[in-house]
View (tube, rainbow, N blue to C red):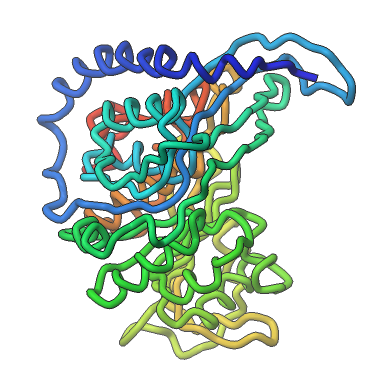
Length: 398
């Protein structure tokens, strides 16, 4: 058993101040690389609704057995939560990020606000409760397997739609290019999504797993990024490619769905409308296998290959006009791989940027993979998140 004293939570404000070093170290890189970057998107305000919190990360040589007592090799306290992480990533990439969530007026909550504001995330729409506790998560990082185990404690009291007034809802959506939800705070997220849908603001959903309220949000969404297990769990399809076809069939508003596959990169299915779709019907599984055969396994940097626009069939489920894109992940040397916590959130933050910048999928997927890989080179979900002018991103932005 790993013993982490509850008093560690009271150290949050001090722990959060450590990011100042990262800001100073990155300033020179930003200045040196900015001249070679394309201009920022004109419409680049993203509104996120979902989880924020404090992450208490303990690294261990190997994951403990039941009733073990072991020592951590390092300890880090920093901001967390899917929405908080994804919007921090988006802000570092140059987007105007706004966040709707709920915290308590405690040491953890004040640390959460401080770190988000230091990364230029707009926290003016966060709800701060005078009582209760802010969310926090214990994370055990296994140095041997490079995996992490999370133990989450939700915030209290939970956020409800009445916490957000009509005037604040409209103000939060003003000028927004895209809405994002991690499906936490699902009742509030649904109210925001319904209003966004009425005024024509598209939405991206992080479908990490089946959650309460997810189906209602999926019916309103334009884009989905999901975990490897989600598509088959949600559709009961026999394979991932078939499941993605099924998702487009079940969700007529959906423009694309991306499933992240860890070391195997990602697979995206984009809906095709209009001319250019081949009349011949092709099996989704067969197209996926063909794409895998075309991968250049010798390249260490992220790449992307695509199918033609096809009539893609899923076994007994139906046919959709679409195009597959297979994105590869960066091959990170074992000596550089530190922690995968928040890699999916980093990927989503980059996808939000790509949508605002009107990136085609062939550019979006390698860019998002590179951002996610950068986050894996440091402990915690935010320490390694790159800024837009970091040299490793510049080739993917031009």
